[in-house]
Length: 583
Image (cartoon, rainbow, N blue to C red):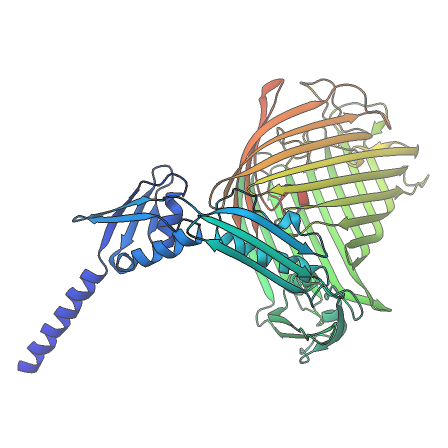
């Protein structure tokens, strides 16, 4: 019994000790003029609570080392002469920080055989920050490694004079010779997957200029197949060689089937049910088959897709094969559509290029709600070869900051006197650009489309329509047909389309960004006719960044008719056509 009491007493002491050691205090930070309170709170391990009315809570364990943490942070930001007073009451800890005179950049000397001026974010007179200095050095190395210079000589030094509060910065760089990729080795065989399937996702080959960006994109491409786990691409840099060998190691996922059932509500189509099933390795070699369906009052559809990676291999080039079969019953504003369709095409991805080429076959029935002289309803049996080519020069596929993107699409409808099909040519050109300046990102998108009819009459579903996250955000997807004035439009689409989107995003708080945008849309009934009225839209939005891309909420309205408005929610960059969900 005596030992039991001793044990209980000992545990009680430790419990009380632990309770005291983990006591939390409300943290108040005063006196700062140039440095953000949140940065100090984060540096000493305080937790942030609230959004508009922020509060900081600090654990007593972190409080014990707060002086050292603040010292490290303040000096890293260039404030070596700061004054700190810590006042601790019963439940509140107050940090009174006088920043004092900062160390400022006195001179910047650059001796480099490659342009690095834009990467050096310091200017003479700026407050010197060692953290910023190290980030600049890292960005210089990243630029070199992305452009093939793996044997560089970089010497970046900051000479800090604490007596005179100034720093002299010296950057010495010699890029040396271009490095190239060498031997590419697969560390082990993956059961049920041919080597060609793996190598088809590697975005470089032996003899290419070495780039860490190519390695990063190879990771993404391998991961996109959804059959591999523990993906690892290792490269070894040899100071005595300009050839970089790489070794690929990966395992096969255990779970290769996925099911998804969802019930939701979209403002443009109402309540809906969605179902999805896929097997990512149904016939081995990462061959995937998927079936998806959605049912709502406005749309009922089902489709199945077969995907075979590296279906054809020729001289180091790989062609993927896609086959999609489906049926759709859709009620649009201007017509009802019933369609059975098949699309078969090959896709080649090489460097920055992605090219699709194939043929579509469709049994289409259109019932018009609005009369048109050049557009008819009825039944059509259509065959249309198509080609799509994309040149992608953006710096990221999930969340780009800089770069441009060009896409062009050709479709040719074959006529048949017995089927009532139409002979036509459809063309679409898109150009996109994005540029970032610290927390500000500017984006622009331009689209031009035209349809030339040679014989027969065009089914309504083949025309150009406006509205949606990728077009005009005051309207739902496909809502806008031929534009008749700045306030009105027809339900049926047109043969010419011109659309522009401009957007500015600015960081508000951590991963939260605000946006303003302007969209304008012109759709004409005639070919190559871009005169007349257009729909102009202004809007605001919020973006929250996640590891798989930003979540976006946009509200847009017609500047000439405010009640013409729409709210859209999507995942991914609207300027880069990832995955979208329109509400």
